[in-house]
Length: 265
Image (cartoon, rainbow, N blue to C red):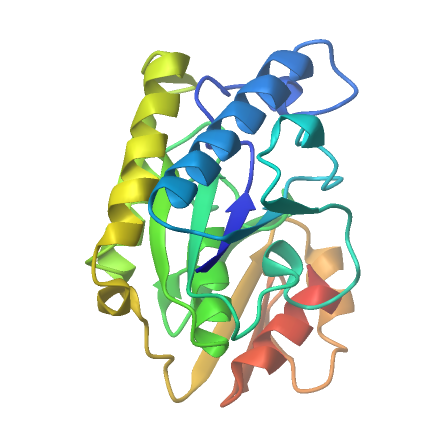
């Protein structure tokens, strides 16, 4: 059983301020360690459930965060950005039995995390078919494009709630909740334990219950914080500018949505 794991840092236990997610700041090292520990826990849970091959996608910022030497030997680590439109799911294809997401976070425009955003800090919010989009949603649709169910997610409580709304059968572990500009977190070791057992349990279930059917048509709306970014993005083929801050794009092919994101985000 071949399993794909995509990992971010803003939904890792404890992360509350942007400095804690940035390599340039002294606070970062503690949360790099916790990110790695939570990914390792997901790997261990997957192996206990019978996984024989693991691909781990480091999907935060530089995509060079996870401490590779701490991963199980069965894991392959995807580091850096290749330029492929799959972005946070780079390397995923039809050969994977299931996907999991670790350290994911609330969407841009929500009040569920002080670190809430979608793909870029320059985006106020995004919508797909009138539904506000998180990175979980974007990447779960990417998985659906290659017929891979997303069966497990960990992160903040707001994200876990949104995930269940999109994939009702998904297993989730909420490691923190929001309190204004603060967060309320469970103990880091407890998060590791729950992620390990949650990943194992998710892969022991009927994985096809988490399989998502893609919509037949996509209407995408990206609202930028800067009108200058919206103006520049409006020149992408097929894009129309709805207002000074917002662009819209429509297609029947989700890969074209991902191609759009690769160029305008």
